[in-house]
Image (tube, rainbow, N blue to C red):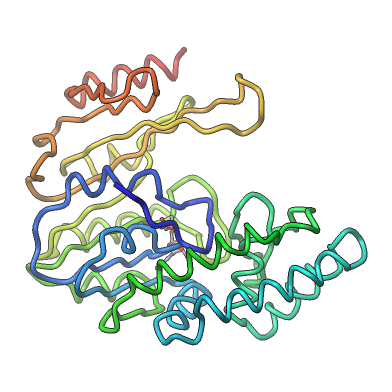
Length: 319
Ligand SMILES: C[S@@+](CC[C@H](N)C(=O)[O-])C[C@H]1O[C@@H](n2cnc3c(N)ncnc32)[C@H](O)[C@@H]1O
């Protein structure tokens, strides 16, 4: 499956989960409703005919509306990034002076092209806003960041996304409740809320009450839903799996990531997909797929009961 990669980045991006989501996606006639859009990678790869795409972060929605309207396109992006890249190279403090200028301008005027610049010039592809809702990721400290090939890569990503976004897709900016309440039979609701008990910022605070409110809406919706959440890592389980989600079907996918160059900094995270219908290729209720993402064990998907899986994870946590 060739994955479309969006031009904006975020630490919560689900690029690696797209094939797992696609594998449990049922046929549907209605709309794709995504209350927590983020970078949009899931919608752009599912490519629904009709969609309602929502996020509480207005910068994300403004950016994708500008692409949909054609205001941002491969030409405007190339021109903007070539100009900004040249200024970065010649700016004082190793480029940081120009980064600060764009950041301050963005925090005042919220231009979507400045948003794209910050997303691609910031440290480690992070998206983070401080308590006042201002951009809060430092410069990656590479004044030559916007090389010809990097600009072309971003331009191609904008172009790819502009070809996928349909004129009838609706982008909204509000809290998640309204878009779920509007879902009907035949629609698919894909939810990827901030992870409970993990990273928070201005647009990503998430409490137990939020998780419970989401559960209530998903319990009563006539639509089918898929929810992404975290299942556990090498230190602990997500308590919400047991408290809130265990009555639904759950599929898990383990993946590894590095927080530093050394082998001992390799961490494992088990992601969960929770859903309320019989998936075409999915496990039955209370069963779990443990996908081994280890390259030496490709295609080695084991099906375990949730209890066996919990035992394995608990054993791993205990070491
Ligand atoms: C984990 S991210 C989604 C990532 C996305 N699936 C992707 O692959 O890029 C969660 C998103 O939910 C948004 N969000 C946080 N609280 C929200 C709320 N109450 N209502 C709607 N969106 C919210 C955040 O702005 C963030 O973009």
